[in-house]
Image 1 (cartoon, protein in one colour):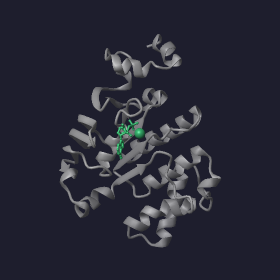
Image 2 (cartoon, protein in one colour):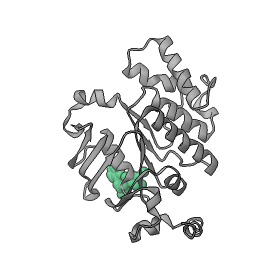
Image 3 (cartoon, protein in one colour):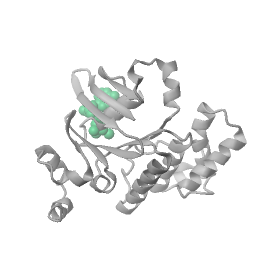
Image 4 (cartoon, protein in one colour):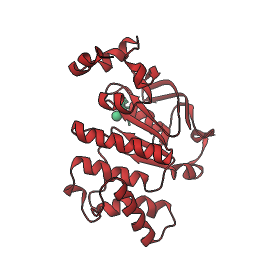
Length: 250
Ligand code: ADP
Ligand code: MG
């Protein structure tokens, strides 16, 4: 369980997050949604320690992460898997080297054990045998899957994904969403996904946090989202013609 408690974050005079509180539960996918620039990535970065909030707390199993120093954060960091926007693979490394990288950094595994683990993770994302390929040889969807394989290499308790579907066609997006969902259930991870993809919202949004100009405007599930009377949320959800048509079915 991760608890975010009254987080504020500014860059200069730009107050990007204004008093965000939320709970993220294990075995569940939580989505952070909102328009471009609403503060989604900033919130995610505050949660993993890539940004320091100006105010507020982030608790991992009741432990205040924000108060810990670099050394003290390491045990929690080891339990965090992260899928970055645009996959962020190392272009000069093979698929296998990308996946074994965190293991080399953070685990005591031998070379053989690392490769076994990489093979296991590759199989999990349906990319067995692709060990020696370089990122440039992969499609967008395959890169995301390698990113997921790398994120789960350390069997994380917490999985963070920033826009896992960006740049993917709708069908591949669903494959990635389902993979994230299966992993979440299988390993009981606390999974936090930033997205602005409405298919993901409707498909995997068990808990949804809607940000609007740095504030939490709404929270709930995908089953509740179509019935909200929050104007900003409705504008966001039903912005596309497809969703307008779909609304009549709800
Ligand atoms: P989202 O992910 O919802 O599109 P972001 O969290 O990336 O939005 O950005 C929210 C706002 O914070 C934007 O106005 C952006 O310019 C600003 N911002 C984000 N990161 C930084 C940074 N490192 N330095 C200064 N401003 C930033
Ligand atoms: Mg973002």
